[in-house]
Amino acid sequence: MSGNTKHTLVLGGTGKTGGRIVERLRARGVQVRVGSRSAQPPFDWDNPATWAPALLDVEAVYITFQPDLAVPGAPDTVRAFGEMAATAGWSCCPAAARRRRRRRKSCSHRCIRD
Image 1 (cartoon, helix red, strand yellow):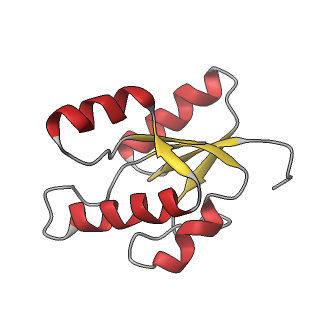
Image 2 (spheres, one colour):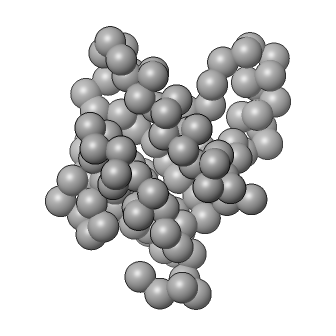
């Protein structure tokens, strides 16, 4: 990836929901990076060492979680990703941050680079 082109990272971009998001973003001319174990760089929810490299040259992230957020431990994993991203200078989109403050829940859908 070049240092000049910013991408939207779609985690789970090879899955049913993520694939549709990738398709729609590309149709709008958005530069998309698919986040998956087979992508370059790879992204694997079970391997936190893959998380930071996947964020290189990325300005926004669309998060999906496989197999489902209802799986035990899934919210903790997504929260850990969010904490890692926050440490790297990321924040939730303003609308999500407002909703999170009102509901006191963590953001798990769209984050942007500060």
